[in-house]
Length: 317
Length: 177
Image 1: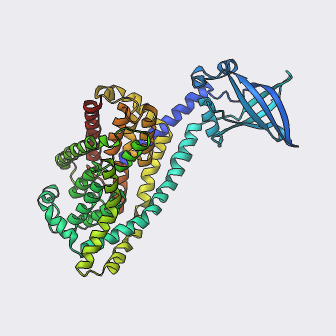
Image 2 (image 1 turned 90 degrees about the vertical axis):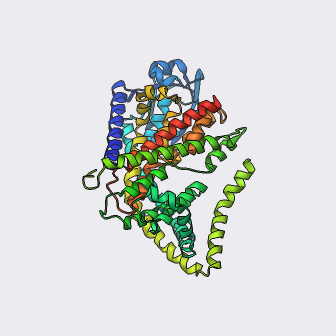
Image 3 (image 1 turned 60 degrees about the vertical axis):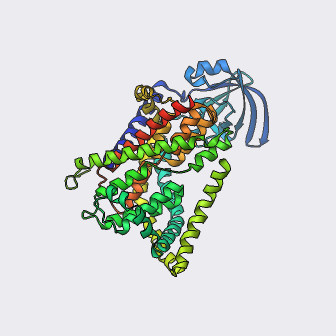
């Protein structure tokens, strides 16, 4: 199953990116190699190799130059830009505040999200400057490779590094709770429910206590405690697993309960609503709670129902 | 109400730790030694997850960077329209399973654009509050014990997510529309 999901995400990503790139190239969305005519108002020399020109660009010039759908975000009739020219005509300008979408995409593809770079050369008409942006090709595929692949790989490790300290903290606390008999107490209290949810797990097994402490952490909104405790529970469940590498019924049930995300107080969401000036930020608590409870009950029943269709021996994906 | 909730969520962590360590000390547990013994596992467990998380986040990252979301939104618009999800909120219903920070950003953006107390703002808050990044949980939890054959877990996780989206929409329409 995970194989298919993984493959699906990657294939869809590459297919969509290729499709968008081909469509952009066939429509020549960025007008690669074509020059934009700019009207120069004033030029000053910043250093021997650096000229800074105030230029204006008329809306009518842009509408004939770019595709109409790319001009839609433009509100003003004239655009004022400052073109910085350095050696051999290499030039760039900072994106104006109501920048065209096509320029934003162009700038992002060229490497600096706030500047469009290109080549400037003087036109035969005095006071005019021709600006040819550097060509942009296969920008979506490049974005998929850079933002999608490389940055995500980096993010994964950053997340894990951030997790190490919290993991150590909560696993340490968990160990104290175990030694103090608190986990056993918790397990005893919830035994009638847990035995029904996890019939394969012996009622006195430490996995029960570990799963309960994870659920309690989730419920109280201690989200950074929930992951370490959940992983501890998985480790205990895996001790009961006769087929290493394949999920047991209990593991699948545990994950289903986890993904339905019952929380007493969705603190982050309330904080955001408060900061955005909501009159009653906490009004969403009750509907959120009901939604998660119903999702939990449906998820558990669905899980119980479909587990027979995924027998362990024939599970090959 | 807000004040009470704020206090409750601020006090949750210190209270839990106080109770556990307090009871431990009362029962004459060697709290420091037990803590260190438990904490030792933190590093190895975290490092063991890296390959699984890299694999999952890369696939999700590619999917998001490609802009496939827009295509999905328009392809599924007949279905989402039928159950009453505004097309602005639908990307959130998908992203919340894939990326925690991504969905938080999207939810903030929706609340900012349409107003925190608008129907869209409230619905996205309910969806965000009831979300769990299913794919992250799958990758990390199964990864930590080396499980590669997840059997029916992804399917029932996604099922629970779909149910929670549908219930969120029904409740939001009933309460706020």
